[in-house]
Length: 149
Image (cartoon, rainbow, N blue to C red; front, top):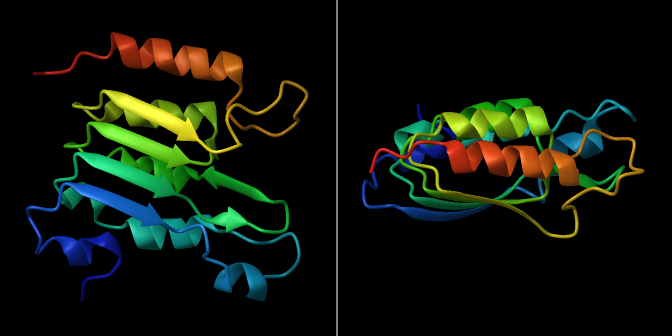
């Protein structure tokens, strides 16, 4: 039985997608306070993305309403990195610098943007969201990235 994005493999012409997982709250509402793990939902929904022929993806990751944060998780970054045909990726939220580096494994990737009011996190923010220096390092690595075509 197919689940996640693997169920869309029967549409080989699908090349652009807006995937909005920002309203995934069911698990967050049933979890104990301080124990929400939205990465499980992100893993479930992104399963099979590497089998699609996506060229462009607008992605809103799940949002933790308790701390008002929407960020790409480790499983999310790993699964997005499997989408080898992807050329443009728009992440509506924030991401850890280390997770962003996973995206450099996508051979045809030309354009990555973090969007919304989460980018970049202020310098005095104590969380691990992408900051100005992190963004610069990622942009430099992406610009050095050899694209086969």
